[in-house]
Amino acid sequence: MTGATGFLGKHLCAALAKQGHQILGVSSKDCDLTSGEALKVFDSYSFDQIFHLAAWTQAGDFCLRHPGEQWLINQKINTNVLHWWVEKQPQAKLIAMGTSCSYDPAAHLVEEEYLKGLPIDSLFTYAMTKRMLLTGLMAIQKQFGLDYLYLIPSTLYGAGYHEDGRQMHFIFDLVRKILRGSLYKEPVVLWGNGEQKRELIHVMDFIEAMLHLVQNEKNGWVNVGSGEEYSIRQFATFICEIVGYPTDLIQYDLSRYVGAKSKVLDVKKLKKIFPSFSPRPLKSGLEEVVEWFLKREKTLLGV
Image (cartoon, rainbow, N blue to C red; front, side, top):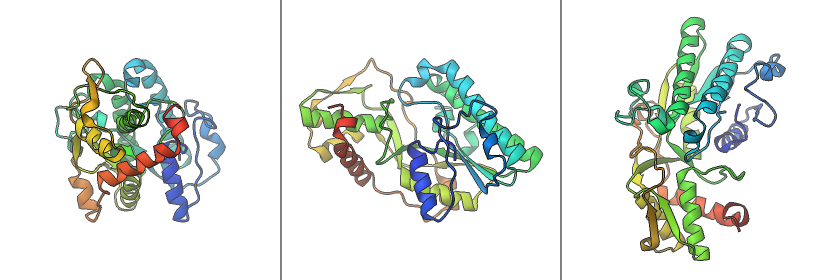
């Protein structure tokens, strides 16, 4: 598993271990995937599955500030992993992560539209590296007959997010800001007008769907989300209700970066393959995130 110490990787490792699997996980700290030599130490192993989660990116406006680096670094990472798969692990099924930002924002976010149109300009480079990853998987399957699965998640949330100071995905940033406002009487300023909409899926719900798809789908790509979107104002209201902060005190900064105005995945294909899939209610998931923040107050709230 590449990206094994990331947000998804940590939870996925634990879930697979609980099922009795043996896992070899690598991260950027112990395996530089931009080097073509990095995976050679594992040549003698024979893996059943390869989970490729690693990517060089962060949330917020990171993609705006690092477009060239994102292309160079992510293309190296993906090419090296796929080359090693073909040369040394052809018996393995490769499960790779896509991104919903690869969709053209004007399109209906259904799998057939994933490679059509153009991604949003602010996320263009990263989005295109993910399209190129899928293109590589399709080409390898076509020529060499190897099996793959490519998953397109909505934004993941839950306890156990990054604690290393990197930029947070919007929902964690909302929780952090509103909690600080509640606990320390600070002003709460959110980016944009609050009308932009987003979809969330709890990381453990995503893993449940992922592992079902690994067993029941191959050589294609599948959206994995809750199928519901809410505005930033609605998310803020839910969090305010949980922490006891007045929503009318929230300010909105219209000058700040907001990304796509709406982004909810069509999950009909997922429901067809996994008809019993039922993500947890949003409020209970947010309550878990708030509780996790409070247990790590000094680290996550900066006090």
